[in-house]
Length: 199
Image 1 (cartoon, rainbow, N blue to C red):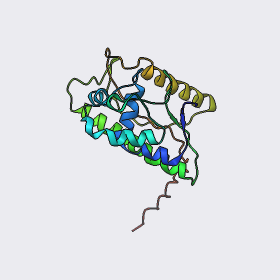
Image 2 (image 1 turned 30 degrees about the horizontal axis):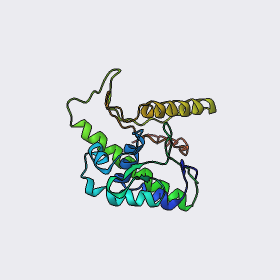
Image 3 (image 1 turned 180 degrees about the vertical axis):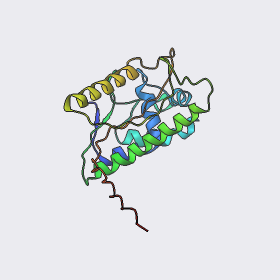
Image 4 (image 1 turned 60 degrees about the horizontal axis):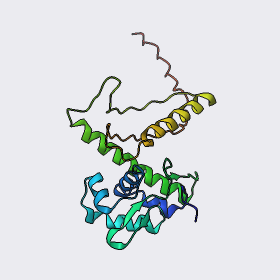
């Protein structure tokens, strides 16, 4: 049976509208080997009892695989080492697009929570080459070659984040981002100045 690497089904994507399930997928993808619920709970800093329901939902949808006997069950994503689950978008008024929008809203909530938590930590680095806390929004006009370069850089960032799986050295970071085309708004015309009244 081929391993799932691309998620298109709206019901499966809807499962990712839960921040807990997003974090479970992230944690499992960060590990090269299958992990027990206890190991997963330790990595997430959550009680193990609260993860079983979410793991069952993810497993039923094929987003997580279970291995071993029930008393020593281990979990992993269906991807191979170095791969990640990807969501394929079907833009327009489609069930897929609606589910993707809900999952991205959840992703951004998790990102906001991560940022807010780190902002209260005086050890967060906010300047220089080791900066680990940063939020920004930028807009700009890009040519096709510029967009290709943006996508290349984002793919490279993904490679950097996922090349060392379950490493205990270095620093654990999360990066959430959105790239979206905008509708160009026409420039507003200035209202003509009224002539001063002669009195």
